[in-house]
Amino acid sequence: MADVSSKPKLSEMKYRIVSPLGNGAGSTILLISDKTAGGKRYALKVVKRQDADDDIYIAQARVEYEAAQKLNHPAIAKIYDIRTKRSWFRLSGVELLMEYVDGKTLDELEAPAMDQLILVFNQVVSALTHMHRRGVYHGDLKPSNIMLSKTGQVKLIDFGTAWIKGEEKNRIQGTPQFIAPEQVAERIVDERTDIYNLGATMYRMFTGRFVQQGLPKTGESGSRKIASPIQINPNIPGTLNETIMACLEISPERRPAGMFEIKNQLAAVAKYLGLKEVDLKGAEDEEF
Image (cartoon, rainbow, N blue to C red; front, top):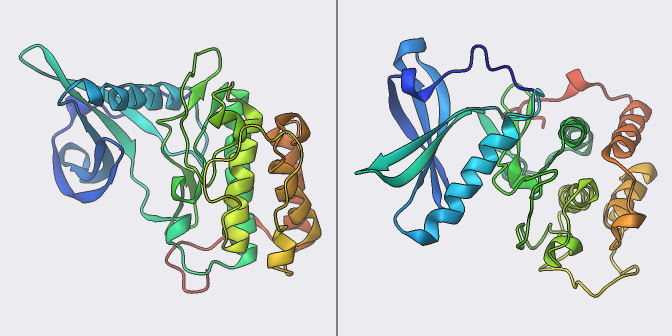
């Protein structure tokens, strides 16, 4: 579980808005500075409720907070607090106080080197292994939800579409280029769904191409014809190529049994290439 003993609270903060960081589905993310803590910086997600159509975004913010409280891993961005906003006793929105990651998302990196990507995904898989052990599934893994800080720390972000084991999930959520077939069919999201999302994300980053341009067909039950990563990029190690292709099996039962298998395979690839975690460069490094 996340450490709650010293978590910052929005109710105890006096902050100023430094700059906007971006916009998400139904939300705005701001960079703020806490005047009561020496100017420490955080990200603040603001979700406003203007009408009933915004209730879905309010619900996602609450799921994001709930999921984050179950996790404590260096490669997962922390969510410290949630605050409900009301106007005349009417719900007007929620705010999430989050860890600020000073860096770039994977899709913002320009031509990242293969060895650096291998190190990045070693951290990603370590984080996902931790999540799954805590009964949390990301559900929307993609390059824009993986950040690399300027100091070389990987951070998974955006748990708004996460699924917590034991809770219902009865609608399609995900990104077309990375979504798993069972997500489209509105079947149960579990560890192997994240494995597919991971495979599609690695495919994109190591080849520069999407494994699929839109929602996969839910009626497909066997294999499909896609170019393997090594056909597109011959420099990809064979073991890595096999791992990515195994993650992308249409049938969940044919994918690796758990994230721990992928963790071991990627660790073996890094060891074979002589790569160490300390070799991972920051997002602003010219050699990345």
